Image 1 (cartoon, rainbow, N blue to C red):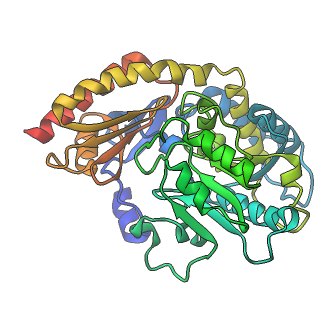
Image 2: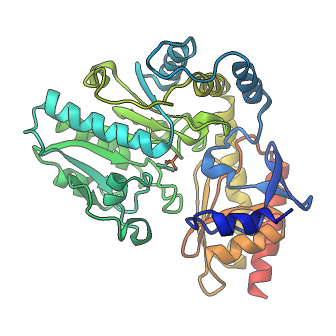
Image 3: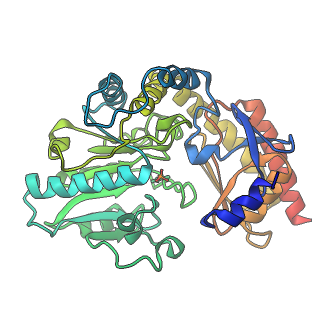
Length: 400
Ligand SMILES: *Cc1c(COP(=O)(O)O)cnc(C)c1O
């Protein structure tokens, strides 16, 4: 048999640069490679695996649904969509759900919803709507989304770009409000910027943005695709800041690590600007995805996982802090989520992730010398001890 990675390099597009680990099996917070080596998964599918790999309740829900019906298209009703929307709305404190598949599609959906709301409700002149975003954002990979990305690698050579976006410094509410004018329909923000390196905005920022949006009749849209569903130690990172946005964008963990499932969750009055035929998706809200999504919501409904992530935040911080003695120059911890800046003199984030893999931990650099840790929310303090021990060894081997 030809090595699978050789085949991937020969026949696959080269749009990723994976670490040299070939996963063959996974369970809970652990994965096993084709050679039988085990790793603690501290990327967890960029937070798509918040419940760990193959969570029994999620596998059971998927398996049961595989035995009933998997796809209908939205041309017909099916018996999972309504309950999924109702249960996700209840979890979110909202009353309308529009399901899609990938995160980027849900972001696109929110942008379309905001523009349509701007024209039909706010009364912005047709074709003039603007949406405010933040520098350092990551919202996905479509043409419109990369049009307002400041990341040259993601952005360059994909023009012509979609107009109608203004980017302002993240964390500066005054700059954001100054960018609002009569054409502004929405502000789109990550409550914590994940890809930027787990950047937590200054206290009061999200609340000030909320006030500015309310004052100026602008929708506040929180992209909680990575920060939501427990990662930040609450159902939503917005919640920890005491803020209720007009719309949440969800994805990643919503599909339980089994299916691609995303959604925009908002108020009925806003959602109703979308009418039959004006937006859609063949796979959006399909029976299999909806059944898995319902099981995900059921896992989150009691709040225990979110509380576990919040409880482990100080445990994670106190374990990572001492690593400053071993070349860590920056550290941000929020829930079970950490951004670590390595002293660039020691190497890049990639170098550190390669050393970590050698020591049995999977993590991913975001850019430069920054890496992100986002273990499954089911991780234990014993596993955090093990992670810290391995991280120390990896840092020491970089310094050697
Ligand atoms: C991952 C991510 C997206 C894009 O999701 P895809 O499923 O990769 O399209 C959008 N926003 C945020 C904050 C993300 O982390």
